[in-house]
Image (tube, rainbow, N blue to C red; front, side):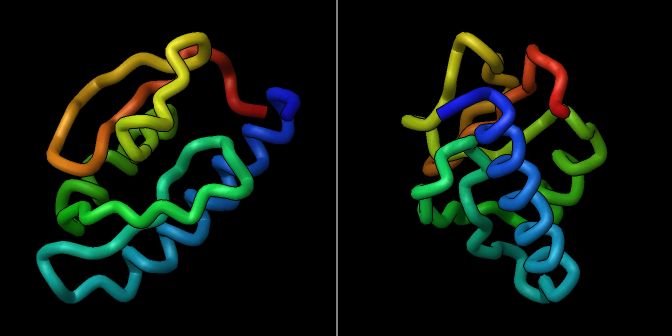
Length: 92
């Protein structure tokens, strides 16, 4: 998979999660992993308040811990069942 395909997938998963967040009423929601793998359907138990905080930085993404790609991102936070990464390459 090319880097541009991965970026498209990450952006798509981010849009879906923003829609989920807009309907969040519980303290914890099931968000989609925002990795670049188009086949990924991993759901992550992220508190809605944490997701909103993470979204304040356009280069931060919520991913399943096993979906971290050290060649294009670095880990910012680690939690039980989910990880926050910062993209080290520009998103197109």
